[in-house]
Length: 340
Image 1 (cartoon, rainbow, N blue to C red):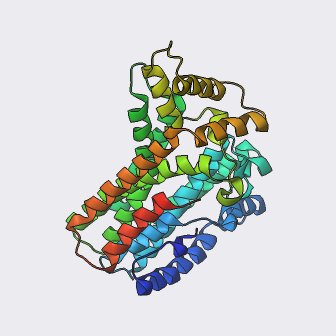
Image 2 (tube, rainbow, N blue to C red):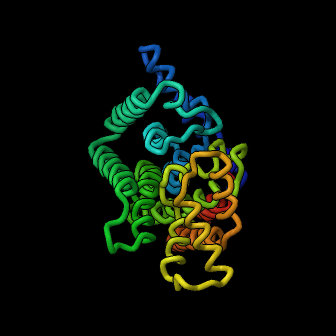
Image 3 (cartoon, rainbow, N blue to C red):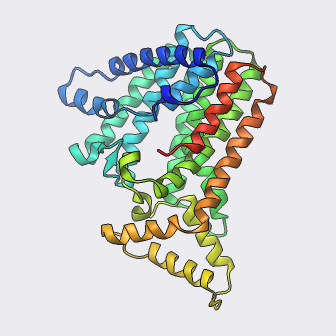
């Protein structure tokens, strides 16, 4: 699913945004160009692999609530995608992910240090562009970057003793994923000259749809095959990275009677033991993935994603009716209904 292929409510609007996305793509390629041969090659790695371009699409879509053709809107769309790409270089190192978008992750090709430094280079390029958008944009970008780092930090350290692990995870998703999606919507409305109340509405929408998006990703990571996602299923399980289905399973086991010999209780304890065991072999990982695919926690995670998407749609109530609002609704629905 590419950004341009997302089902938008109005064909004319979809055509307009497809053309605008093509301009963003050209600017992205220009933005990552480096005079150094190695830096140029590594910086282009994920651009060449493609991607959904959800964040710049949301920037462009939100801008249609105002003067969407302003040149600052395109710059803002490039900034949010560059920032996202930079985080992917870092995330793949931390998660030891072998694949990204169907291609070997950068650290698999050039090593961890080069991958991390490439991510830093992209952050620098994003900073250079956002500086041209003014002090307020710089402040928003800095605050977003801080939340991205905090989200990764809290995911890495985990919840404090006595803290609700599910609530902690939602906070991680809000910072690590939703913050940049909210900024994408905010930049679009802001640089299109929308009034403050519209910008605030788009921020709330972005925060909620961002959590929905990541919860849907937790489902997709287990329910889809690597061919459709471009990633190895269950990588997070192997690396011990918490996801909602696993957290829900842990909560079930913790709340149950340890002496319960019922079929569901035994199944839950055995599956959790398998997840906490050695998943280094592909066979062990595949067995764990299959166990979670067949477990009710996967459907519960999907329901939670749909709930967050519904709240995002409700946040749009104050916007005027029309093709843009309808497309924001379909954007939210598509994020949780997608297969990759």
